Image 1 (cartoon, helix red, strand yellow):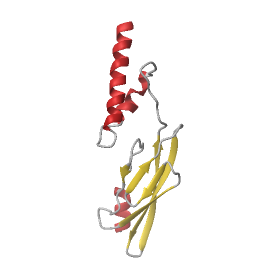
Image 2: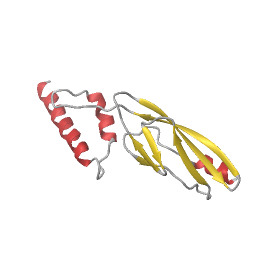
Image 3: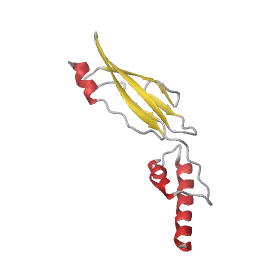
Image 4: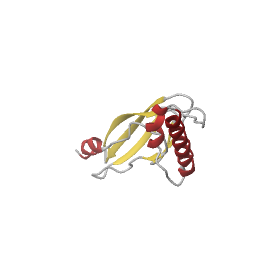
Length: 130
């Protein structure tokens, strides 16, 4: 019963731009271990390390929920979007949502700031020239 309850409560984000943390203990005391079918998301305990490449990748994460002698699995599909390179002279405004999805943290604040400046410049330049 505990395994089934905890299985129902596990949630994982459907898209991963940056590293994230996975639950290793269920709400009702079960143990949760994780596996990935693709190196785009490497699992080390609770830590999921995301490596973005030149194309989008669909990764299957498998949670194994265990309590005493009972266990079950649950799979999640997580999209790892490709890296988007931006410059001051080329910018597709459809990428705005993807850029803003990378929220500043201690590790990526400078990158996000760079994208924001480029975005701000490009939107200003496009408005000025229209």
